[in-house]
Image (cartoon, rainbow, N blue to C red; front, side, top):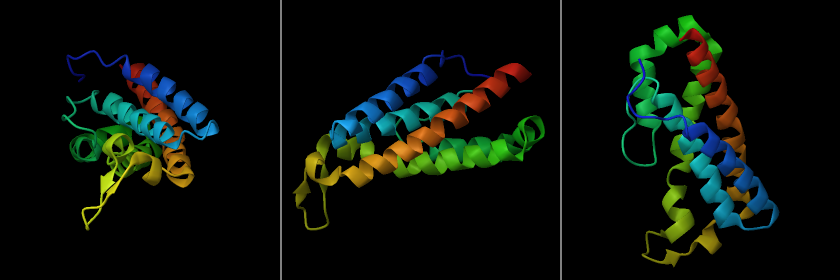
Length: 153
């Protein structure tokens, strides 16, 4: 089952976001690199979820993937193998890790002492590099799943 919403634009946008993350990291524009890496992972998660249900509104789709795997994990394992199931579980974890950065990379972060930390302070090279690692792992996962899904059609 697929949803009625057209989701064909999601993986091309994920590819563009991944390229933008790489390009902006190379320019030391860490906040933009974090934004683009987060978008890549989110687009990948949304594309996968759309094969079964409409994703929830928001930026963290880990729960959507987990629910999809609870309901359809046996079918996914039989049709596409256990490695696909593990990769989708990893995609859920990666999406959950990067989702908070959707807001942080734009507005910053207020700590427990109510001190505001702007994106330029919290989006470090390390955060951007970690985001890029997750994005580079998420895109092939989503692409392989979507190819297998359409081939099983």
